[in-house]
Image 1 (cartoon, rainbow, N blue to C red):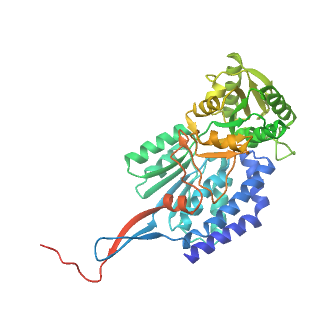
Image 2 (tube, rainbow, N blue to C red):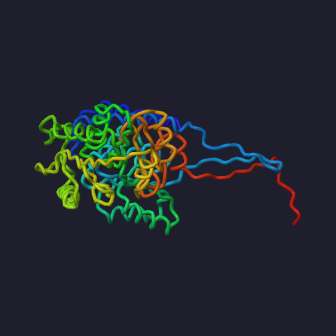
Image 3 (cartoon, rainbow, N blue to C red):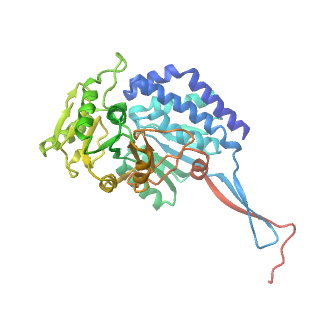
Length: 419
């Protein structure tokens, strides 16, 4: 345990020492703006230090027994864990499974997205190699969907930890279920930000812009639906549109911008297609709606109905659809009328927000914050089509995710039996 803890501590130190180099890879490969890249490396440091406490964390419990014996439940390493990570936050979304799995005594197969194989794969492997991790404990397997299928179906693998889209997550869950393997699935989201009556509109619009436009909206926690009380709807929309129009887009490797490129041309076209289809159905562009090279300008949509694609779908782009509500009951209904259930932000009076939070189906609720938030010691996950619950973050969730429970009994001498 102390050896594993030392490796995790040293990994955290190495991420700190090499932060500038790692951030540069996140900019070059993932299109991260520098602020986001720095935030992601900071999360990586925190993840390593948090997981350094796992090897010496209590690994079981003493049970009562009707028999004259000791009865124990102990946690043991699952064995081999496959980690499949996405492109958007490639470093932390791989590391948040790699680090606790290693800390708890497992071996790991890491398959990063091929578009971010360095920042989501090579960086992690090199850091742990330099930190003193024994050879053969962490394997890096970059590749496409065929490699992903292989690391799910390999008979040596006992646990699969996947972060990515809901359709791929469903397929992985089906394969894992057939093979009787545990699959921890952290999937998509179409997250709601509710602005209550009386909220500070300027601060609310700032929160909404951050939630929708951070990393070009390419985050599972991105604010995808802005649900604003009718008394503030016009003022909020105008303030959000003004912020969107003021955000510069471009190449973060060459200039100081707020929004970098969309990950590839296919996704860029998908984002624009959802926006144009919704406008054709009657929505109004209050800001943006334009392709700018490899980027998409920060966009605000109004006049939507809840059946439009910009409202129903996870866009994974910098698009902020805004709709109004009149009562708390209506707000709760609109929030829950969604296949996803990952993150919700509520802005305004805390008492009213607490009442709304109790009516919401979501893995995370943030009062007086937007929807994008993560800490290494906090359980992270969603419900409904957003995944299989909180499977990452904090000692309890990590121990549950990456170990198996074994029941052990001990008698002082061989028991007497009637046979």
